[in-house]
Length: 249
Image (cartoon, rainbow, N blue to C red):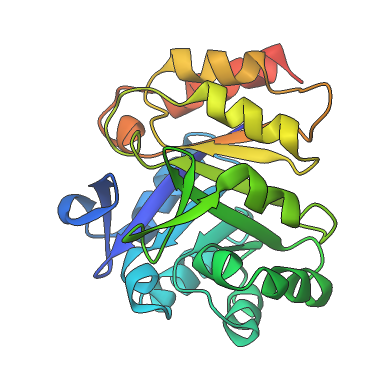
């Protein structure tokens, strides 16, 4: 299982939000490129980038920063989400050196777009499903739909999606622990590998996810994204990844 550091970009800085609220942000660094290098040195094998401005604007805003990180660390796989609504944007990110592109809001509004993207960019598309009480949220979490996260995930079963990132909004940035049960239920409901997000705040969360990383019927839990916890030293990235490697799956 991968432990994946998050760099959330707002106005060119590395920040963390609480429950997705743009007005409730903490700036951790004004140099995201340097921050990416720090996590690489700590043993990161993949980096999770989110263009927060882009998520609300519906189009990339921090694209230059993402390109700078990709150029500085070509050996580090990057996954990027936020404001990705069309094929052209996906192509630009992949051309810039990004490894995976995350489709969130557009996956909810136009599920057929996911199938199109997977066909044009096989092995490069991740779907981001963010939920509040099991119901999918869109537009930077500003809108809650009447679509259940598992029902939507099942629609992508045959599209060739590389992974699903599942975020429990209530847990995100709150340091309250990951929603293991909901993550496992999603992994069991679909053959697509799941990456847990939201509330991964201590080593016990990594232990719990690693313990259920392999599900008997689904694609399993392939990774966990963590943000505030590693910036505030509540979770040590190197120790967490080492644990996953030793336990294995």
